[in-house]
Amino acid sequence: MISVKVCRKCDKQYPSNIMFCPDCGSLIMKIKEPEPEPRPKAVKVKRAPMVAPTIREEPRPRPPKVRTEHTRDDFFRALAENSIPQEDLETIRELMAWSEGLACSVSFGDSVTDYGRMVFRPAVRLGEREVSLFCVGTNGGIDIHFKDWVDLPPFDSREKRMEMLSMLNRIKGVKIPEARIIERPPMPVRALRDKDGLDRFVGTYRWFLEMAGGQCGSSA
Image (cartoon, rainbow, N blue to C red; front, side, top):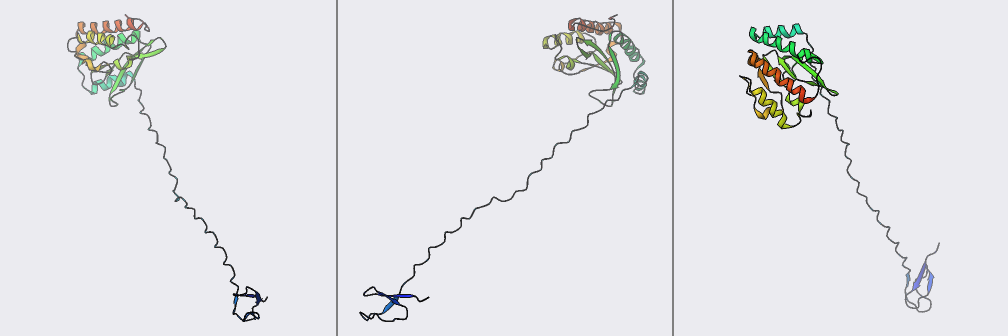
């Protein structure tokens, strides 16, 4: 294909092999081809850096503490091993005989708060629930179960629990602090050795059952 030139003076076009314009004698110049339009630059898309997904580990559930059930013989054997005085052993037997007469259930198991200690725990039915009264431990202590009564009418009232605390603190040798009426505070079995102490303790719990509105068995 023959390219074309143009005369700068007369603006006439001639074949590219013609050097000078035949009309005016001017030098014929090669037509400048239009420069191609620049290609648009590709837009660079910034990609977000790849982040490895976080693997969230679910917390492993802790296995519950299992309380071992024991027998009456196990309980008294542990009392003997702990060198509990004979007077306290007799008191515990009397207390057990009385509470078993009114309880819906009794159990010999590990302590709720101290898993190295075995306890005797009587429970009564109040309405549709079974409520622990107290527990006697093989360390010679009695835990009063105020904590189990904080949602038990009328002992969900602080004033009512304080009233029971006052009755227990009238027993010689018992001094339970007021701050512990939302816990299971201990008192010594030895405080019930004499008849007056045991009678006050039993009387306090008879009043508790009367206020709570129910009991199982006999209250004798």
